[in-house]
Length: 205
Length: 205
DNA sequence: TTAGTTTTTTAAACAGTGTTCAATTATATT
DNA sequence: AATATAATTGAACACTGTTTAAAAAACTAA
View 1 (cartoon, each protein chain N blue to C red):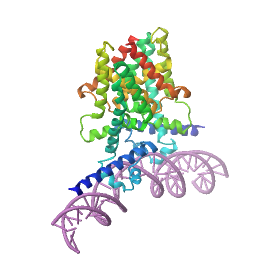
View 2: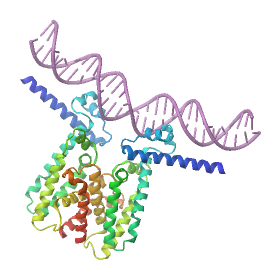
View 3: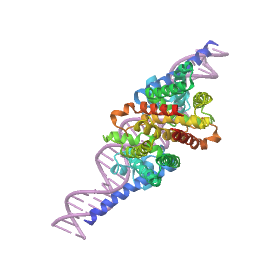
């Protein structure tokens, strides 16, 4: 059935249009100032149509959050060539921070706002797959470090969560404008310097 | 003028009523589900009245955020009796985390949501005083640690921001439901264990 | 080509949001 | 008691996410 195929294709195309419009508006106007009507306006459809393609706004947020993880994963691909696990761990942090600060709205969506997690709760999805696989990737790198004798006296999972928390903490304080505790001229480089401080620490233990 | 005094007192009383109602609703319904009309309903006034006491919703958020800092500061008072700065630093982290998890809506208000920072921007307030003084308190404890020979090769400010980021990262990932990357049964204690991992690290450097 | 069926899309409505402001009510002063 | 001042309200405005009956479009079969 060629017609049925085309219909499926058309449905997918509109789904993409909605997500692309939403994504573009997130960057242009910010996450909070993007409404369903804004998205509908941009794709030149009535607002109602969106609810035939997505359950609610949270599902749109979740879908884009998933695409953010795909982008992050692809950025982390280059780490495969880094042999030394300690070097790889540090490079992972650098890429993570870079991703967060270059795509702060996307990072916000992935790791700060409630919407994508609310979607998981609403649909009774027990696991946050995207988060889990990212966490596992970090965990396995840290495991390799431990196998080489680093981080002695530490447990793998708490340590992994702690390291993730450190970089998340830095970028989320920056994104949510809590870095104004420091000299405004220095703010630009504070995250960089703080991450350097963290790398110094990691090397010592 | 007794009448003028009473008028001032009455104005202060209504201001307090508004803030108390808002605070109570934040805890009962959550930050996001509390509206100006909810607050007005609770104090049995019309919604319009609130705008004679506060510029906008952000100012209410900011005012309560300030009270959160007073509460946090008072909790940190006990640290004065801890002589050893390393012990004090670790105890500071413990109290900070406890405060955050016991008053997650208040923590959200203080360190995650945009509203109080938006208020500072709207009113052209250059400094985030509450954040700065909390940061300075942390900084001076870490300075004492460094004077005793800890954290060699580190710069004070980046290190301070890094340590803050670590605890902030842990609690904010928890508060915004990103801890579901771990076995649900372990989630309860993950922040505790991660902070233990951090303390082990601090002791080694 | 026409008639009937199915799918897609819309417009309007609902209940809510923050905010503003003219009109009203209450209080204080002369 | 009349006037001036301050406090409070209610309705309106321009939004928000979401639902749904109705209209439009597309497809199928005679």
